[in-house]
Amino acid sequence: MTLFYLTLAKICHTFPILRRPFWKYVYERMAKSYELSKWTFMNYGYLPEDGVPALELAPEDENDRNLIALYHHVVDAGELLGKNVLEVGCGRGGGTSYVARYLRPAQLVGVDISDSAVRFCKNRHSIEGLDFRQGDAEALPFDNNSFDTVLNVESSHCYGSIDKFFSEVHRVLKPGGSFLIADFRPTEEVDRISESITKAGFTIQETEDITQNVLAALEQDSATKEEWINNLADTHMQPTLQTFAATSGTKLYKEFQRGALLYFRFHAIKP
Image (cartoon, rainbow, N blue to C red; front, top):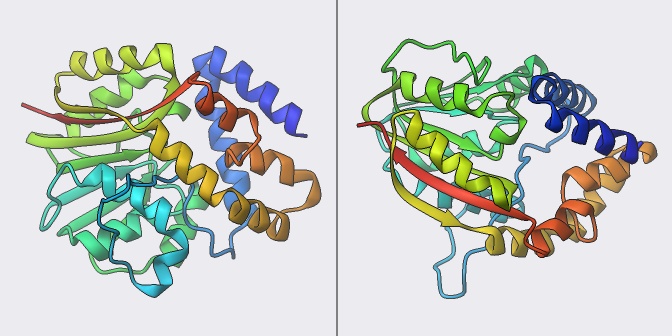
């Protein structure tokens, strides 16, 4: 089963027209399979360097510290207090909930292509000013100049056309608005991402390689993720979920280790 999904994922990433339906199927299936689970985060996490003050988190958020830290590091480049914010690719809503509860935007909308994921989010995260909608990252269901900030964490690698996505983000952002994105790609493709952001009309303010921070979080959280997967998932699905979670020893983990994959962060502004 693991080999099947990995082979299918490789084929779909070779042919971008297949990428979006493949990942929609994967996330729809995962959302339906684990609809009652407390599992709300789907990112790889971030471990700050030594000496960086630890985030102050409520006790109920401690188990997700490294996963929350990735969101915190990405959004720290933009001031969200009182802003109108959109997260594209909200998944199961853990990061969206963190932003709403701790950073207090005036309004926050999480969008995901999976109907099941959106239904899960609406049931799981009931917070004033927070809403979830089904939508396509390449055809966002919002008017021009609607948001002060657009956030995108570890989702864009699933899209069929990154150029269409960046164009849509530019369209729905207000002039002067911030685009905050973090994700991973084969190292040789990251310059292409930067060029595409600029081509869409953005001015890039910050670029950062956070691969080592993400790798450190993966290593620290690996045993916990494996235990969780073994307790929650059917036996035949466990190797596949471990691969997608990039736990220690998996192909994705090793590709981060040897530098074949790079995890990047961009902060861009719509002039």
